[in-house]
Every structure is written in C-alpha cells, then in structure tokens.
Image 1 (cartoon, rainbow, N blue to C red):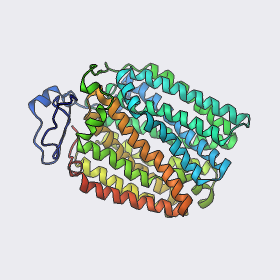
Image 2: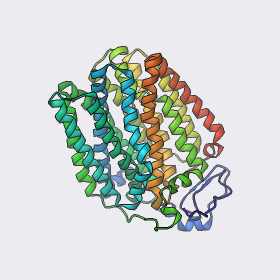
Image 3: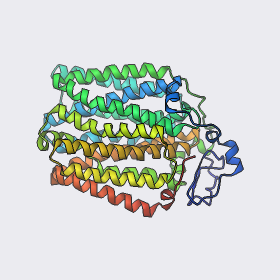
Image 4: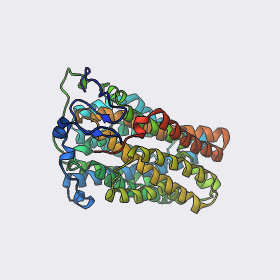
Length: 449
C-alpha cells in the first residue's frame, strides 16, 4: 500500500483495505461497497465452488498433500522432542524452553521471511524450507540411534526447525490465495485446515507409537514425510504472483507492519490470538499430564496431542460445507471464550476421557477462530504484500503457541501444572472480553465478502 494512501474514514464500521478496493469486510451497519470495489474485486465476481470441486483442482490438491505432510512431520516432532527432553531432564522448565527456542527464529527473521515470500517464487521457498527440515530430522535420527543425543543438540535442532518454519509458514499462507479458485478462499482454508488436522490427529499418535518402539524411528518418519512434501510442492502451479515495484512504499520490508497498524480489525484479530493463546496454551504441559496426572505413557501423550485435532477436524468438516456468513467478528470472540473454558476443564480433570473431550472442544473452538482470522487477513491484503503481512501474523501466532509453551512451563515450575493451566484458561477468557471493548470494529465485523 503506498505511503500516502489514507485509511477510509469509515474503518470503524468496516474494513476498507486500500484505495484499490480489493475486499470489503463489512460491519452490520456499514454502507455497501463502492462501484469501484465491485468492479476491481475478483473474489465477489465468482461463485464459490464446493469442497468436493476444490479437491479436483490440481494445484490445490498438491498444496493440500504437501501441507499435510509437513504438518504430519511437525506433530511427530512435537511428541518426540517433547518426550525426549522430558525423559532426559525431567524438567518442566526445559519443556517450556523448547517453545522459546522455536519462537526465537520467528522473532528474529519475521521481516526477512515476509520479504522473501513477496520477492521470490513462493513454492521454491517452501521447498527449500522442507529440505532443511528433512536434513534436521535426519540429524536427530542419527544421533538418537547412536545414543549420542544431548539436550543441547536437541535445542540446536529445534532452533533450525524454527528457522525453516519462520520462512515456510508465511510463504505457505501467501501461496494459498494464488491456488484456491477465486471466491472460495474461506472454504479452501477450511478444507486445508481439515486436511492438516487429519495429519495432526494421526501424527502425534504415530509419533508416540514410533517413539515407544525406538526414539530414532520417529525422526526417520519425519524425514520421509518432509521429502515427499518437498516433491509434491514442486508440482504446484499457482496463478502469477504479484511483486511490488522496487522503490515504492509497498516494496518496503516494513510495509506489512504499516498495513496492519492502519487496519484496527486486523490488528485486533492477530493480537487477540497472541494474548489469548499465550495464556491458554497447555500443549507444553501435556507430557506432565500424561505421565504424572493421568498416569499414561507415550501413547497416551500422543492421544492427548491428537484430541484437539479431532475436534478441529470435525469443525472444519462443518465449515467446509457451511461457511460463516454472519456475525463473524462476534463468532470469533465466542470461540476464544469457549477455548478458555475448555482449557480450565482440562486443567482440572484427572480422568482421561474428560481430558480428551475438553481438548477436542478446545480444538473445535480454535478452528473457528483460525478460519475467520486467516480469511480476514488474506482477503484484506494485496497479493504483493501477503508475505510480509503473513510473516507478522505468523510472528503473533508463534508467540502465542511457542511463547505460550514457555509461559506454561515457567508457570508450572513455579505453581504446579494444574494451577498454571487453570490460570491460563481464566486469562484467555479475560483477554477475549477485554478485546471486545478495545476493538469494537472487530466485534462489529458482519461478513467476509
């Protein structure tokens, strides 16, 4: 967006991205879109396709498979690395440190990664990241097999995975709008999320099973899936990628930050995810719950990690058929509140069935928030800036997930696992209620068009 482009004065009622009129995210009482926006906005000009038709779209299918395999490997890594660190050290603080080590590359490389996604061919960036991840998995498999693994080596490998993820995630997010049929981004997001959740469900379970057989086997499976994901990414044929002209304001490496600051609803959306999940994340504590509270082993940990994905998958199946068309801002706040309540129930549970159910509800609620948030941000961003805006968004997501693991680990070390998890759930609900007051324009978002 050019530096002298002023924000629409009606932005408190709806989100007007720029003078280009790419998308209009309207509030319930906002005026209708301008004739210019209706002319230039390609999404509204086409009827969305069904979820089944999306799967016959070759580029989207390859994207779906590649993304799922990467997700599969990441989930196996979460189980294997988490259990191995806790097995080596027995420390809740070290479990939290895993999240911090993964987050640091995102914080350090956020602007570079976003700029790379906008300046280079996105599928090649994704392939390079998958190659680095596969090499790291090979390293972990070898040192674990040889019995030469140490805590420091695991943290170094985790840091490298964090670097690759810092580039891969915003690039993948910026690639999807170039692949999904026009007018179907929200449904494509739901389908892609559902496919990812299938990998998330089976990934932790397989990771726990493979680790129980032999720790190095889990890393070997990661290696295979990342290699196949890299191959499938090469078959993706996206639409031409827009590139900002050099010397313009939109080419600036910090253009994504300026864009987000100029749109209160987007700022409120990504900051809500940051603070809500930062306090409400219990993922880092699952090894403690599995071994000490629920008294189960690696397989039980895999089931617990898969439970949120089961709920998320069920919700994505619903959203793939029935897109959210009304009160989307309020629906996102309600989903975050349910997420916090489910976290509290899980924290207090000493029964495996109730813990699994709570995590499933937590995952379903989070999916509603994710689909709304992703659709809002992507539809509101010009293609030549999607990498940089996506990188900032990914920074917020990683801060909520991985810094949330660090916060949970520190809180558990200070107060105990159960009090820390309860406090996190309460803070999540409080943040959602506070953000409803701080960002009224986000609460009033009515539709995504």
